[in-house]
Amino acid sequence: MKNPNQSNIPKFIAISEQIIGKIISGELLPGEKVPSENELIHSFGVSNTTARKSLQEIESRGYARRIKGKGTFVLNKTEGYHLVRTLGSIDATRRGFDEGLKVEGFKPKTIVLEKIVLEHGVSAEISGKNYIIEGPVLKVHQLRYANDMLLKDETKYISLKLCPKINMLSTDLSYFKVYEEKYQLKISDIKQNLSAIILPSDDPTNNFDLDKPLPVFVLDSVVLSSKDAVLELEKSLYRGDKYKFAIIAHPEYNGK
Image (tube, rainbow, N blue to C red):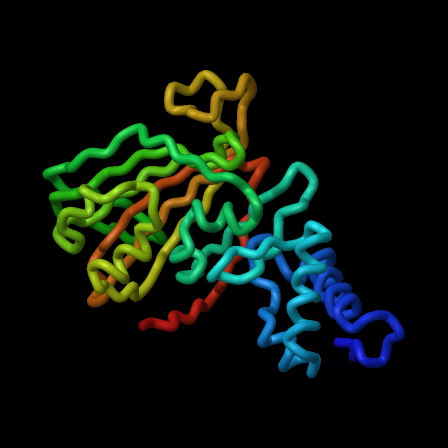
């Protein structure tokens, strides 16, 4: 990075320009954190006032948004916007759908279509292996929106043996955080399959309500807790014209 002290323009402008350049180039993606005040102070050798003004400048120009107590996040300014989601990332899964949208500058909304307890177990084949959750199981089928546009049709199955009474909680939360914080479960792995289909407009299972066929990503996933116990199965449909997926080949888990 260039040293802002070598420029005639104000230091906070020089710093903000460098960070905005990383946002424009894609080095910093929508939803990612920009460096904090302390990180800017350490990296550039500036005062906390200069660091704070740098972040305020980035925010005022519409490239990022500060969320109190969490940090400053890159806003999604892509044309017609595409959401980037990372496969294989425990941290990305922990953040949850709603929080992910909020940090990118969107207003999330959820409509619950079904929330029931299944007495019998469920199973799914993922990465060539069959995973089973023994009953009872909580099934949650919900539609996830950003700015009133349906982006994700999500169905989750959660073990009530591992998470007793989780069916009593609101669905408007990050289940992943609940697993860790309320039930003290350590997540050992996430396995996911991603495929693509064309969803006909007259398909009775099509909740996207468009009058033309829609390309859709189908994501099947399993969340495993310690000793490979199956905690959650999920099958979700994502609008193919609004999503891009990134992949982490070997995620590292920084457990508590």
